[in-house]
Length: 148
Image: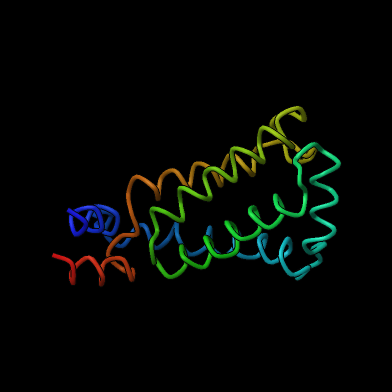
C-alpha cells in the first residue's frame, strides 16, 4: 500500500511540457521564499516579514513568515528539481490562497494596485503541477521507476 501511495505521488503522464512550467515558477517561489527566510534579494528576513504578518493579522507573525518562506523556498527548489512535485505544489497552492485572501484580494485584480493577479497566476501554476505531476524530465520520474 505504501508503495502504491508513493507511486501515485511520483508518477506523471505530463511529458516534457511540465518542465517549462516547473522551472520558472520554482525559481520565482524560491526567490520569494529566500526574501522571507534570509532577507535575500531585497527581502526583510524572518523578523521583518514576521512583523509585517503580525500587522495584517497573521499571527504569530514570525511563525507565519517561516511557514510561508519555507513553503516558497523549499517548494520552489522542489519544483525546479521535479522532486516531490505534488506535495510541494500543494504547499505552494495553500500559501498562494492565504496570500490572495489575506493580502491581495481587497486590492482588486491588478498588480499595479497590489492586487491578486500575480498570486492567482502562481496559484494556477501550482494547482496545474499538483494535478499533472512533474513530468518526464524530473527526479520524480526517476524515483517512480524505482518504485514500479
